[in-house]
Image (cartoon, rainbow, N blue to C red; front, side, top):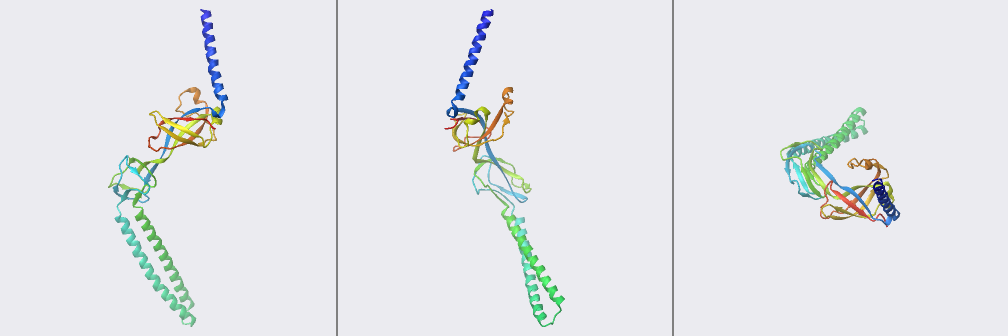
Length: 276
């Protein structure tokens, strides 16, 4: 019985030694050795909202619809904004008319002052009145510009190419400024977030070409765009106790996604040569 135990122990020791030898041999191959990492897709999302409050009049897209740069996706009831603009323009015309009268009075008193036909205080009052009306004209012009901007902001456009993830509001709802109306998943950039162990850090480099593969057979070209300069513990999603205490470095890999087959959070395999 003891002999069998000794034999089993020897076999286990030899097997462990063989594994360690192959591991060290792979390390000694240097940058040319292949390296496989595992990560998850990270797609940026964009929330669309109006810059002004109002009542929703139209919602052009449904969940899953495509939106391109400049696509009109929603609009508010424009009537209140049009009314505001009309009021501001009327106030501007009123201020401009008052400025005309103030200019005429000032010019008349300027001529009379030269002949000493008017007091200096009357002249100063006319000058101050003219400058005050000029300031009112400037304010009225600024308010007109603001009203015009608010009217333009009653329409919402997508600034980027993407797919509608969530249609948050419906026509007829009253929305506040900055309240999310749509959530859009952007077509680009698409990133993969992966982690590399400290011993393998020398085998990766910014600009290194990689292949990103999905469990469903997808195969995409990628390139390492960022290597974190700061070590961190293995993410908590890794449940192995020994790995949870290991230090790793985060990689961000830019991936071409021509068929839009990569989805947010999708697990992927990253294969690389480890450098050239």
